[in-house]
Length: 304
Ligand code: EPU
Image (cartoon, rainbow, N blue to C red):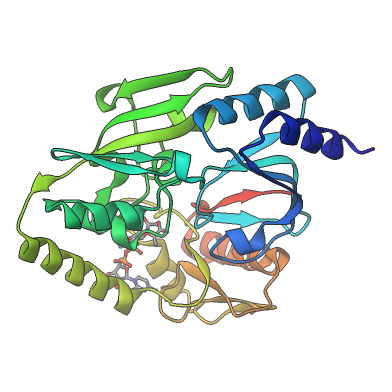
């Protein structure tokens, strides 16, 4: 028997409440919709389950990764070896309200956080609605939009270290940068407390509508992984660099540089990860040779 079969059976026996599958296609779990299968796919039902997955993989020497909403992810066509864990189970994605705070499980969608804030008349979290991610993924990469970033509106985080122990930390003790939060590169985000400020229904709705409008006009509607590259420097948009190079509409197979925003690669339907990766290389080469700009991927690239 393969080792992936062994670990599958072992985890299935240890975690009766979890969803467990073998050879799970991952493309459909990402917004770009490309890439191969996970050897083993698990949705644990609790933090205790999560710790069991982590410890078992460690003991067996099986590689392991956490998948969020898959909106900033490019999975290669050969898929992902070992165990892929997703925190989408209700036990790890609930949202509860406490005054001006929203306590959100890592699996909660940012759209749901924004909706709960709106319902509770808490302002300042409207920008989250347009980010197609989960709380865990947004913490890990300090996701942002409309001039705000996730860790600016979070007061506390809860996470699991690589030995399966759970910690809580005040945000003052969590260093974050543009599109990155190193704490969550080595630890698994479990939950975050978001803070809003009391506001009127009308003011919240107005901001949300403005953001929606801006996004609607400036971002493509086809499947994509959001922005492919980080902005090279504050005030310099990677999308503008790519646009100025005349690369909108450039194509490799079913992958095309969006004609709406240069920093998006869209999947016209039949794109493979190889198509997208070729297009990324082509863009980087042109930006380097013609503009002296070193573009760095914002999207995370994983798998074989
Ligand atoms: N622009 C062009 N051509 C293009 C794209 C943009 O000329 O093809 C110009 C725009 O006209 C604008 C400027 O470049 O004057 C900046 O564009 P935009 O407002 O779209 O912002 P951005 O810097 O390209 C960032 C984030 C987006 C986020 C938007 C809106 C990064 C890498 N991107 O884009 O985040 O949605 O601001 O807040 O930081 C993502 O991270 O996946 C993402 C989409």
